[in-house]
Amino acid sequence: QRARRLCGRRERPYAPPTRRTTDEEQHVSAYPVLYEADYTEQRNRLTVFFRALLVIPHTFVACFVGIAVFFTVVAAWFAVVLTGRYPPALYEFNAGALRWLARLTAYGYLQVDKFPPFGFADDPAYPVHVHVAAPAPEYSRGKALLRILLAIPVMVIAYAMSLVLGVAVIAAWLIAVITGTMPKPLYDGLDFCIAYTMKAYAYIFLLTETYPPLSNTDPTLASQGGRDALTATPGGLEG
Image 1 (spheres, rainbow, N blue to C red):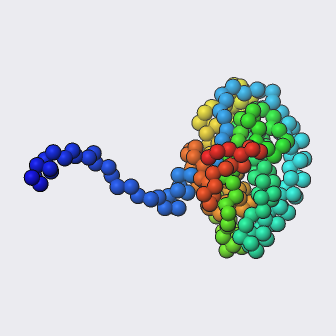
Image 2: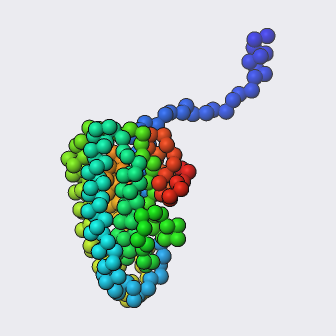
């Protein structure tokens, strides 16, 4: 009778055992800061030719934004070291400054043609976006305390990226002025360097305590501390 029950039982399809991903594996596939830019092949020769002059208004504003960010990051550093928490107002200001800086950098390095807005909020009509996950409920005080030392490798890589950008933007300027186009391989090189630079700034601004990955191809965005809301727009996004 037991043999008949065994013979009449349906076999279940094999399902491979599931394995919980570690924090390290999650950080490889997703990061709490994501840089995105829309590719456009055709370029305006005139605005490309005078790009160094066109960025002057934003460069002037950048002097004051840089001073403000210096003090807000220092204030955030003290808050995280003393309490383990990032004040929401400081977090939103620094995340907004990062968005503005990303748009200015993309425009200055010829990744996009459209003149960037001056605001800190995300502009859906603009082809450059920086998505930042909501602040974590708690941060490591030790990592914040030693951030200047921990950021040295990140700053070294970011400096190397700036050297590559310096060469790439000259090539991009010449090609765009002569042909009115931006080759996709050259655009991808600009995108790679700018994306890492923005993630490096996010790490320096204490917006994340995870080392920025070199890859920027994964469209997912890791939440910090289990919160899914993002600060990419004033109203937030659902991750």
